[in-house]
Image (cartoon, rainbow, N blue to C red; front, side, top):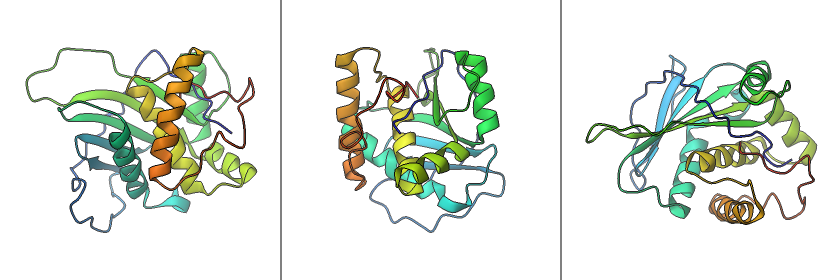
Amino acid sequence: MSPEGDRASSGVRTGAQGTRAPSRGEPEPEPEPPPSGVASTVSGGLIVEVVRLGGDWSAIEPVERLVAGVAAALEAEVDLGEAVVTATLALSSDPHVRDLNRTHRGQDKPTNVLSFPAPAIERAAGEPDFLGDVVVGVETLKREAADEGKTLADHFQHLVLHGLLHLAGYDHENEDDAREMEAVEVAALARLAIADPYQQQPPTEEQTPGNG
C-alpha cells in the first residue's frame, strides 16, 4: 500500500536529543541501540533524530542504519540548502498513531506514516533548521509489508522517505505536485535498491499517497 498518512497542520515535538553520527563517506561504526530510546543519525547536512515511543521494532534493528540510508538517498535527490537541517523520526505504535491521526486529521484510525512540518520561525545564526516530525506505526508497517510481500526494511525506508519528503516541502494535493513527488521518491528509493512501489500497484482513491 502506498503511504496513506497525511501531513498534519500542527507540529508534534518529541523532545529528542541525540548525538551526531559520522557524515556520509566516513567509516560507519556498528550502531548500538540507545539505552535512552533516542539516537541521532546524520547524512551530510541532514540530521534525523530517532525516538522510540512505542511498539516492537526489534525485527528491523538497527533502525538507525536504515534511516541513515534514507537520509543519504534524499539528500542525493533533493537540495536541502547549505545549512544543517534536522528532523525527528518517532517510532511508535498503532494506538499512538491513531490518537495523532484523530487529533490532527479528524480520522479515528491508525495509518502508516504521519508528517508534522515545523512552523517557519526565525533562527539564530548557526542554529540548525528544524524541518519537523515523522511518525511511523509499527503494527501497520508489519501488516502492510506482509500483505504486499515486501521486506520490513524496504517498506520502512519507503515510509520514512515519504514522510521526510513532506517535511522538505513536497506534496500531492494536485496531479502535477503528485507526479513531481513520486518521481523524486522513486529515484531516491532506487538508490536504496528498492523497486518502484507504484509501478505494480497503481494507487486507488483510498490508497493514494497521503501527505504522510
